[in-house]
Image (cartoon, helix red, strand yellow):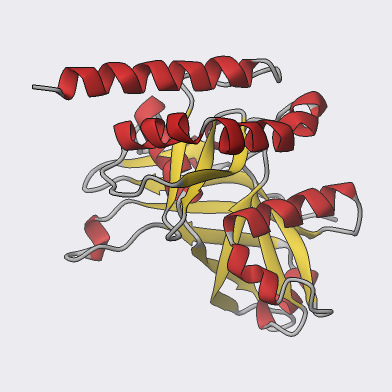
Length: 262
């Protein structure tokens, strides 16, 4: 018999009601994080365990992990698949004033096949350095299906988040076109991509490539390894919608840059 998970985080008060800004910040924290603290429960003693892992995301927004069978957290997940992740950037000063995102979910080891290959490809696109060990016999891909989350955006700015606040499942047709769309943007429109990112981030980098794409936005890597998350103005619901989403971002970037000129 499975345990009753009880009420989700968003059903518990008092916290701020999530708004578009909170959802965007949560996606940015997850999208721009290469590493996270993974909390699991070891068996049979039932003791908590926190470890550091690298991560990427699936098109749905759920999390991809590449874990070694030799690790304590892999053994813990084999017995108790519930887990939590903490992501966030650290900066000089009080770390407790920095935004961070906690996710709760269920972790499943992916079996070899199309889904596992897609997850592995997205992991390596975001973390190319992992290619050094990704094919070792003891490593396997896992997915953490997000149940809910807690966003701490700063002092007195805590939000309980449901899965719907963080995830959006793409259609099979959108997943099938993902690689072609990424390749088209990277090969045919690198200047537009740089313009989009320069309009939304303070950066000196000019050489960017899209690493991963989803209905709500994309993550891009610079040639020096910087990682950014850019959201679309609205969710894409069909493959053709990606073109409109990127065109809108380019137009908004041009308008913003024109207004900034003296």
